[in-house]
Length: 379
Ligand code: SDX
Image (cartoon, rainbow, N blue to C red; front, top):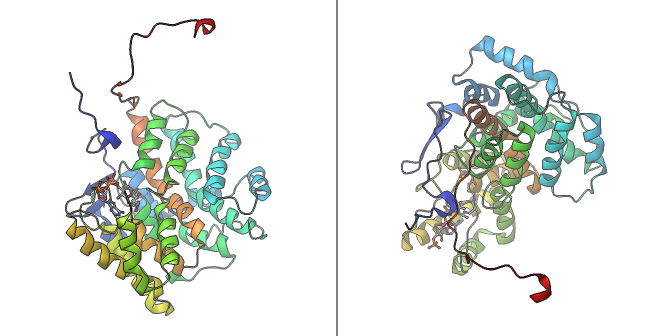
């Protein structure tokens, strides 16, 4: 019987979930029933609580959650020392993946996957991820790491441990919005990778390390860095159209930050980030990247309509301009994506471990059969 092959698992529904819903035709995303456009008013902690517990916290629940997280953000000194020894030009996502994997060696109970232990590890990783990123960034510039301030939120602490200065409310709000928008997105490549790893009942650190590895790829979380490098290569609004046309003329040419396996229309997160980018551009007076982004989007809309392709800006297209205007170095964009997505990965690991089935698809064999072995002397 000729099997139907679903390369890239396009259109394959692998399991059920209660965490988030994506309507690719309408361009809608919701977390636990709340539309993403409404959740950008919430702090990242409130949204993590929602993703992990199924409902937004009340004031007492939020305060207790924050109190639980506050003491967990510091890194073991051995890991800081290993990061200190890294070559300063090491790609931060390699350091991030290494640090996450290393955390297992400093956990009193890294391997048990019962609900209580998985949540305990999830709480630690949630606040250690931003510390890892800020520690990498400071050490590679010869600066000592800054310990998190238990009084600050995750978004605020991330900015504080990066710069050593307490962030403004406005900067903290933009960081909260970016973290909320990047927190969760169903069975994307890195989440599916983490769930697949967890399905063998391996430990959380192994599953999350696998997710970090998948997120790094330019077709996935690495796209935001690729968008910024493209904007720098383009250099001016006038060069945007020639760049897009040259890219599309290449076999399998891809303009980074566009297209999506699920969205057939504009990614709702891109619409929100576009407004953030426009506001930051207006406030900073640095509108170059914003205007270039608009021109690229205009040309892509025209060219994709001609080609009858459902290709629109995705979350990575405008996040690049937002991070640039927040002053982050380009090779920190994907680590920041990981700082947000650890919450989505953990929500899915809770689901996977709670009702597990080993993930093991088939491959249709197309190789030779029935060959007879000959000893090497007669080959
Ligand atoms: C993220 O899955 C998620 O939810 C991921 C994510 C999340 O929150 O976790 O949303 C985050 O990863 C967003 C995507 C970031 N990646 C990029 O911006 C990289 C550029 N995009 C493409 O590589 C592509 O659109 C993918 C990888 C995102 C989706 O790939 P698919 O579903 O395999 O689609 P495809 O590559 O087969 O493209 C379908 C058609 C093609 O036509 P043909 O050439 O085959 O006739 O659409 C065209 C493509 O030409 N197309 C593009 C394009 N993306 C698709 N044409 C030009 N530029 C592009 N970026």
